[in-house]
Image 1 (cartoon, one colour):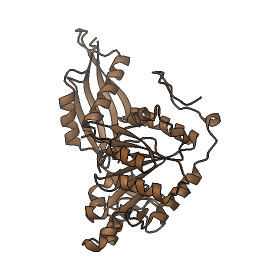
Image 2: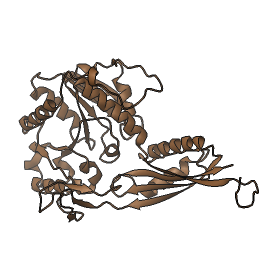
Image 3: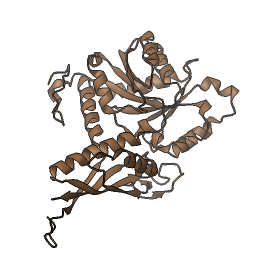
Image 4: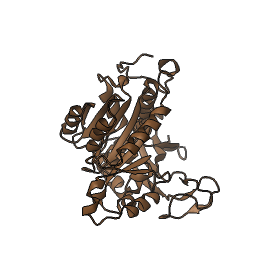
Length: 114
Length: 253
């Protein structure tokens, strides 16, 4: 249930952005969630909808963009399919994860400015 | 003001942020990491299911290392300080971090636990996380390496079921191997599963009860210890953060 603690971090960050931008409200958020970020997007949405009441995010819809996780060789770039051994069969190098595949990022906020 | 008609409505201003939601935690983790490095302490984040043998591993480490290192630990637990008391008994100076309903440790909890604890005198500092194969995986604590204990009773497909946890592991300790003769478990299947979720696969089969594999584990710790240069301390100790809240540390700058 770390979804709630992540929502708390998110709302705190948005509050400081709103303050810096002299916003009266926040209209919309875009968050990207990597497939291997260890976060269930539905649970995260539920946690957000529960937690945002009474915060600057009260009227802010959150859009979640799912980012797929793809493995590839760190040397030759050969793609390594999900479920395969995570070592390149050609180079013997450990596989690398595609950008954003294991991250939860706040991408954009839309502020309502007077 | 609305720029279309000047009606007095608010206008919408998009702001590109592109920042990790856990950026705040990561900052504190970096802070912890800098302190551990400066003091020459090898900090290890020990994760695994409840009952997978995290505390038993640390007790066995104390026995097997034969007093060559000064050992310390903080133990995350929802409701008790039982683990910290067990570790104290085993000769590991310990603190409990009682998380209440919290399912994981974060960098701030670890940082707070260091206050008033003589952690700088240690060689090895174990951060025994809350028993959980999900949530602890995404919180950086400032450790030098992630260890995951996986007991042979947990099922051969555990690695594929919890890829996020094993993806971040530097070493998996396959625990309770003394039970293998009594189980329908093929170790080769567990190891194969690990190779499919762990890009830098490394695993040691151990038994805290019989001592199997502890030599290899102590060897792994020795190799890691060698990488931690002692005495480079305060002089090169450059902080990548400020101390806005003016928190009191026992460290010198």
